[in-house]
Amino acid sequence: MRNEIISQSSDKAAKIMLLGCGELGKEVIIEAQRMGFYTIGIDRYPNAPGHQVAHKFYSGNMKDASFLRSVVEKEKPDYIVPEIEAINLDLLFDLEKEGFNVIPNAKASHAAMQRERIRELIKKAEVETSKYFYTSTLDEMKDACEKLGYPCWVKAIMDSSGHGSSFVKDPEDVEKAFNKAKNEARGSGEKMIIEEHIPFDIEVTELAVRHYDENGNITTSFPRPVGHYQTRGGDYHSSWQAADISEKAEKGIYEAAKKITGALGGLGLFGCELFIKGDKVYGNECSPRPHDTGMVTFVTHQMGYSQAALHVRAITGLPVPTEQRLGYNVIPMLTPGATHVLLSPYEGFDLAFGNLFKALNAKGISFLSFGKPEAHVNRRMGLILATAKDVEEAKIKAERAAHYIEMKTKEFPQWKGQEDKEKHLIK
Image 1 (tube, rainbow, N blue to C red):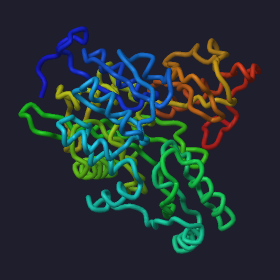
Image 2 (tube, one colour):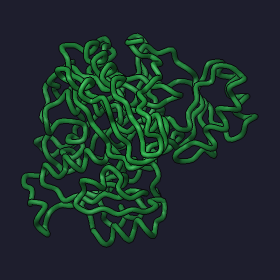
Image 3 (spheres, helix red, strand yellow):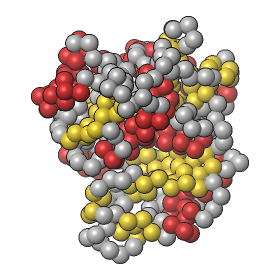
């Protein structure tokens, strides 16, 4: 528990070190600074989004133990906060043994950053999942797909943002999915998980928060479930809060998230991905950190209670006030809201956003530029956030504004908007 904070201008200020400085790490850094903590950002490339706001930053390969150790020993952070998968996990265990505070702990980072480990942990926590197999060769994958039946999912064992994932509709898609998992995964594609396709009603993220209560005991609290959908084989495209589900399903979500995060242990906010079919809840994955779909909390919650702020509160021992809902500690939201991604149509540098006056000239619309220095086709470069009297209106407002916006790069100076309307409400 924490009852005081020394200003970040002091040499006695508590230091938070982010391992990964993408758009999510950037928001954690901003919230940590608002609360008075000194921030250090590390990422593989210079001028990453979090670098632009951290007190101090470093660039380097975080899979290189010597590089990462040199920075940790130099800065001596009070909190080491992994934000991406591409980290030397063995070093996290070593640092923890040496007395460094790894968030939520090295075991959780090790488990959650690889699909086989997190799936087995979810099963051990007695949360139901889809049927699945692990494979490492094309022949094994073909056999697994036949056993599970079509359609099914193929995912690289270690990945993020759906880069190594594919929805396999029939046998003709198998080899393409195998090659995508092998060659495009952001972590490791040497092994894959083949999953049964559950025709779920909705996919949700539960942003469960493990924090200290007033008695110094670790407890778990819950923002309302976040609904979302994915496109292009598994990349988040739109999210909204709160998800339209039954009270029985909502209770099941809280209970499943409590079991999964309890098995991971430690303090912080966890992004638990779950499938909902009727009142039934299936566990999928869980990240021990803020989640891309959870960016909707930047507008649905008051300042200091977004997913990034809740993560900082929890890991540093600050309080997380709640109210009772369905027998659980729930963090109240202010308003329904939704997000829609801004995906680059081009490769290149100096990305520009255009047609902003038309896009933003509506009540309840906010625009978020991530500040990434280099664009790639379909790379997430920004976000539209919308609030409204209900979720459906917020989703439509976010979608409409996002598709008004156009983009260009130095190499491709022709303005172009997003054209893909898969799963959209406005056709």
